[in-house]
Image 1 (cartoon, rainbow, N blue to C red):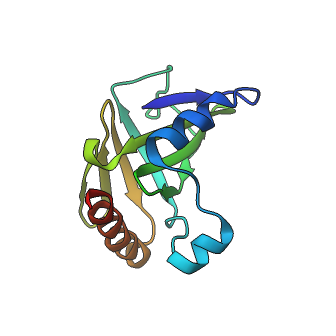
Image 2 (spheres, rainbow, N blue to C red):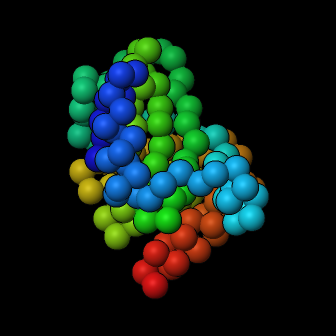
Length: 136
């Protein structure tokens, strides 16, 4: 679910935590070796929502993925507005090739450019582990 983040809107964090699980603490990140993913460049969002048109936008939009116990979360900034996408693992699918990483959530399809292939492979392995652990 793609939502616009407003600074005074703390309900969004509660919604994200309810659906995907709480954010890992620093100690839990060290113990579980769950750090943010490498950086990706957002190329396209389908269907267009909140008037986000990346094809006509001259700036680059970069982001990292955060894995939680029940789902995946990522934040990005477009024209000085922050957005959050979050989805449970059972409503999530992805495809990856040499330069492209495509994620399909429950409502949207995202196309990313892979900037670091070695760390992308490590992230995919970690993602598979989280998906398998969430099914138990």
